[in-house]
View 1 (tube, rainbow, N blue to C red):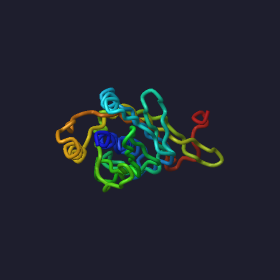
View 2 (cartoon, rainbow, N blue to C red):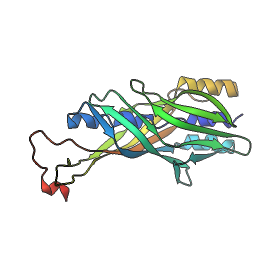
View 3 (spheres, rainbow, N blue to C red):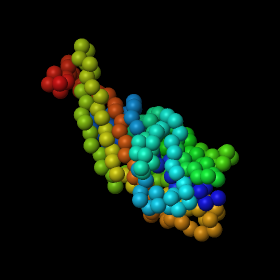
View 4 (cartoon, rainbow, N blue to C red):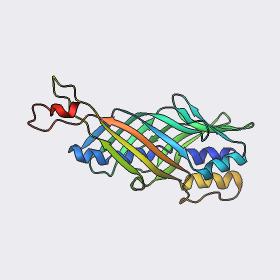
Length: 225
C-alpha cells in the first residue's frame, strides 16, 4: 500500500505549462492560439526521489512518454494538444502517454493527463495494481513562479515559408491538491505533505505559427536566415 501514495504525488504535473503559454497569445494580438507540437517534462525534487527510494519505488514512463534522465527518472511527455487565450488567464491541453511508480509489490500508472479551461488543476486517470480509480484532480501550480522565453517566429507569406515561434518554459513548481492529500491520509493514516509542498518542477516547449501583420505583403527576408 505504501507505494500507492507515490503515484498520486506524481500525478498530472504537466498542467502549469498550458497556463504559461497563454502569455504569447497576447503578443500576437490573437484571441486564441493553438500550440501545434511540443513536450512537457516532469523533474522530480530531491525530496520526492528520497521518499520513493525509502519504499523501493522507481518512476517509469508510459509510451510515447519517455525517461530522459536515467539517474533522476525525469519524464518527458509529448504534447497532444494545447490552446491558450490572449488574456493570460485561461487555457487547456493534454499530453500523450503517462508515467507512474512501481516496486516489487505494486505498480501505479497515471494516464490521459489533461488541464481544462477555467481550472488551474490537472486531472488524470489512475490505475493501481490493475484497478482503475476515478479520474481526479492531482496537482496544481502557479505559472508566475516559472520562467518563459520566446524565440520569435516569422509568418508564412508565399512564396516565403516562414518559421514557427517557439515558447520555452522552465522551473514551474508543482504542488499536490487537497484530493491528493486526502488519498495520503486514507492510505497511510496520516498526512504526508501539505498543499504548499513542492514535489516537482515542470518545463516544456511548444510552437505555433505567428499571424502576418495586416497589410504586410511579406516578412523581412533577414528574419528567415
